[in-house]
Amino acid sequence: MEFHVIMNILCRFTGQLWIYTEGNKAITFVFREWVLNSRGNEAFFLMFNELAKSFPMRRGRNPGNGDDGGQAVETTVKDAKKNDMILKSSGFVKAEGSYNLASVFSKRGRKGVNQDCAIVWEEFGCQPDMLFCGVFDGHGPWGHFVAKKVRESMPSSLLRNWQDTLAGVSLDPDMDLESNKKHQRFHIWKHSYLKTCAAVDHELEQCRKIDSFHSGTTALTIVRQGDIIYVANIGDSRAVLATNSDDGTLVPVQLTIDFKANLPLEAERIIQCKGRVFCLDDEPGVHRVWLPNKESPGLAMSRAFGDYCIKDYGLISVPEVTQRHITNKDQFVMLATDGVWDVVSNEQAVQVVSSTQDKANAAKRLVEFSARAWKKKRKGIAMDDISAICLFFHSCSLSQHEVNLVTTLKS
View 1 (spheres, rainbow, N blue to C red):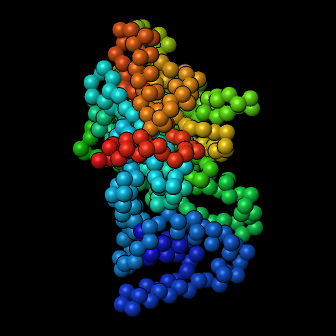
View 2: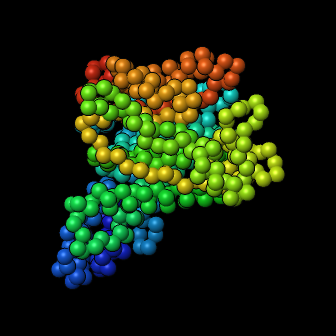
View 3: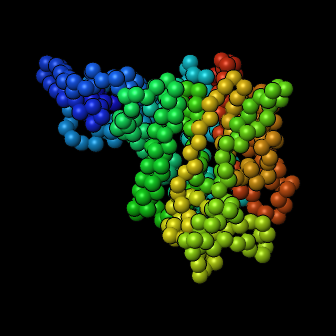
């Protein structure tokens, strides 16, 4: 991002005047007196440092009052793609010097085209300690297009909203920055996610190239920032953490709620909006969302992007946003579509991934295990698409085999 963009954003927070002269490269800043002298000075510089870290610094001319944030994010995305920091296919990604290692795998089911997709973005927002990843499970005739559209739009929109929120937040001068930093960051991310999901859903509705009236997608995403992960979930995909208990046993901790239509609060909202929730005779126990006077569309989840035919009847695209502090006990987190969780327990998934010697193959092994479970447990039922991301928190150096493998995957 160009330097003037940072200053434009900071102007909105501080009321500062700045002058950028391209000819002799002179840059002049005039800060309001309260900025330099108030007790909130530390807060300002904390925000400046946080914001500055998120921008790739480039000098350039001042374009005026254009969408600087949008242009900057576009540049950031292009740079990330150029440097192989974004993975959208099966494989794995590990940036040089990073503790993160993300393994990704997706398998087409028996229902037609694979409507699942995934993404991992290492050094998200040009910050070495940040990573974004997510799985998206499309449904309906255009579901695969909807899932890919949301996968394409969501990370850049989130990054833009996070930067804008970070720049615009007003910190109390009397606030104890150290004790409130974690709390403040969570609310910044939560606000950014809420704004992003509303914008992405609106953009999808306006997109003429994709018919999302009877099609939609779930979205489960994670941002890792240092030793904190922020989890946002729309739909019935699931995130499960593997952590060591006090006796040294590796145990699962479910980080998300499967937003199914039979959850009391979800069903209450849908019914209040005149939608209906019930099971078909040939699907006992599978609660679906229906229009008031038609047996359509029969969604198995209560939250999703798209599906505008039923958005006025209780379906929402509002994410549940949570955070988790990562400690040395926490080993990895699994993000997977319901193709995994319909046939595999949290405990089984942890066992499968933890017993995989080659971390780069962890997601593939989990998906293949799930595919075999479908054949045993769901005979006569077409297997769903199955996708997973396994994000390891404390990965060691890659073996030579893994180095060769990642080179092959990216070539």
